[in-house]
Image (cartoon, rainbow, N blue to C red; front, side, top):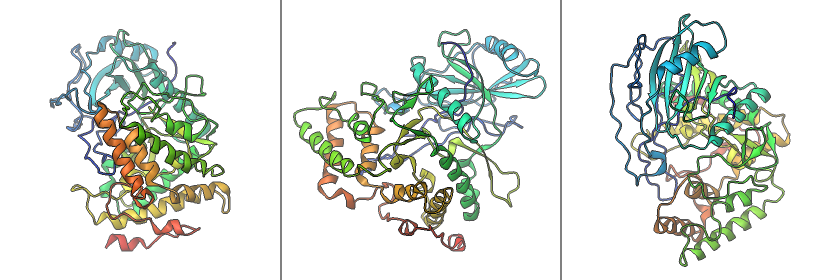
Length: 476
């Protein structure tokens, strides 16, 4: 396939081992340095010690600036979860890369003078390319030489689609190479540097009022994406059409669609005769299919579960939302959304969701005094989303209903089968048993969000106008 315009940024950060959750979801343990953090001053920039390793390619040439600190990455054992697998460091040919950057990119920026490693995550390495006139661009290089070309092609198609049909800022791609045998040494993309820092790096410094303002901007992103409507579940392919799923499900042996209905999509994760199903696990799966079938077919006319489907960012979290914050007396301003790989098209039920960083989580690193602030931010987030659409409109009602209808039945299924791989039959059977135990204990009484044991629905979901609470209460 020919090299073409692209649109991809960011890196999937290396995650620490996720905390086990008895309800099925793993607690997110991530957040690495951003690939598009402020590039105006990189002289003191160091990669994150959690999932990053400084140090450049073995092919160093004059003019390159080598990072001064070397951080060892512990290699993941082969029996670790697939998300934690560590691919070998790349040995890139910086001479070949510098030649491409100098002669193949738009604009008259002169020679590419420096190539510096600014981040290394589980799946990609990130380089900052600096030019004679001070201009910079980002290079992202794939560490997995066997990654399907479909993943990058889908991301390219997704970002192009978003650029054409919305005003959401995404990085422009200047040069794309899909070939792992390319002279540079890996598949890669050279793209626009978007000034800004990832939201997670400044979130703790923000007042509740500023958090509310930030989430209103995030709500605008979702509102724009909600206008992109499709009749099938899947991912955009190189032709800009809905094709097979390119989400982060590690089980490549499953049917990846595209799917006409939400039920077909859910059943694709638990097909009859799946790899590890046994005589003892078969009755469990039969019950799971029965419960899902009954629930989804009861929602035949509900737009939360049925077409049109919406385009979802593959990892809509704080590390992929870039903000500028020059005046701390004012709220940060959204600069762009990065890292669109593994994006997919699906039902509103999964589309309208609280980002993880405004959910309440029972964990040592999360302060319980954040609960009050989180609740106000969640209320304002739903309110801001709803108010993006005319009062009394179907779209506005869809926002409220998508949050009101959150169910343990679907959230726990998502955690157990849509995001996990199984290494053994015992592991898969144990997941099925735990899920069925929840069903048998009246799963609708269980919490859809698995992070906080005493979670209860937010009160704004009971009203039609999403009245936001008193901000001052959260600041006390």
